[in-house]
Image 1 (cartoon, rainbow, N blue to C red):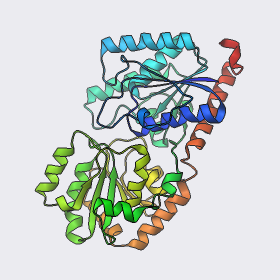
Image 2 (image 1 turned 90 degrees about the vertical axis):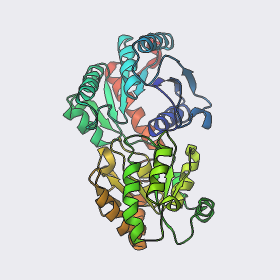
Image 3 (image 1 turned 180 degrees about the vertical axis):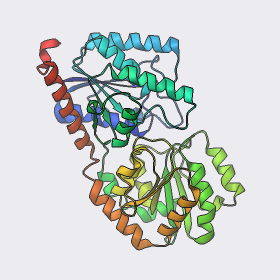
Length: 395
């Protein structure tokens, strides 16, 4: 079949990695023709496509398809998408992210594409927005939901959020967990001692790691605040922040004010293929974002045999099973965060038991090939309903 994916930018991020794996699997495992339409991949997060083997995948970058709202660019982007869809005549248009989801679904629907699908990696509306922004994005999503045949959620929590906001009925959603290459995480501890040594950690250090852009709503500030309590109780606790972003200097200054500079290590920008070795250097993953679909860092840590402490937001509870694979705590609760870290810092047996359980439960579920198989089966079902399963008939 002929499949077109549309996303605003291919930075190093969870939604982007999910999209790229899906595209490449369709090409390599199913011999499909796949075209990826994206906008400029600007930002401190890095460019995913330049760090990946994309052979066999058709890629087009459109300058008009930018992330921020811009009436001039958005009109041009809609026109560009409309033209590309009419020229290439895909069987499936699969959109990702809020902006690309809105424009891509509108263009595909206008062009009568037989299968239009959108993935909800994270809802564009959330409780921490101003009410007018939240209202606006809900209205946009309701409008766009009428211009696709089905929507994929990366976690059940995303479906619940969209249904509660009356974006669409539950029947229009399927949960397909975001896929990844699990093998490097299974083997994450392979060079653990060397990596820890290169980061300045000793064998006796207990390392709490966080993988996220150094950006708003990612919750690094809560980890830094909780670190004061944790460090007072255990002299061996250290912290590893994997990622970069515009708030790095602010965080470093806050850490210095608290007298914790020697307890924190920043890796800076890390290519996706280097993430597993840093997970291997950790003893526990801490995830304190206030808004996330289902952060890839959570299953990545669990597959690596590391327990996770997470704020109970969006899809986190679907992998962080309280007292089983880690600890789930209320958002913004610094005292609870610190208490959970102290408990795991003081018990190697608990860390091993929770990490082992996480690996057993989630390794197969998060393989990218599993994700793509479920997505392609969805395409086939939708095309069958539309009578367009014989794709040659409408090219």
